[in-house]
Image (cartoon, rainbow, N blue to C red; front, top):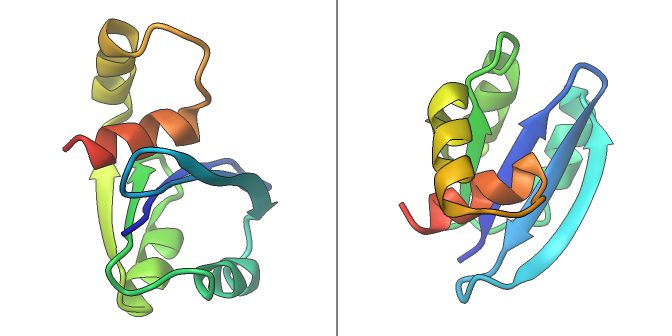
Length: 105
């Protein structure tokens, strides 16, 4: 199983993929466009889990991921920030913080 944290921006999406043992498998960014997202999703299996922050423009991305059979969790941006500041005391990027929080419930 993979844990995929997606940090959504207007023009691109930064991602971090963690393996079951918590090691980073992939990190990068893709264009924030449904066509690119669909291509990106071909790298994953149905049991892989995704997490995105509930920003103002997450719905089309959430719907696209879910329509391909994946489970997606929404993260509250304020709660993620508080948890990250108290538990993850370094300069991890948002997508990795999301993936680590997802992996650890």
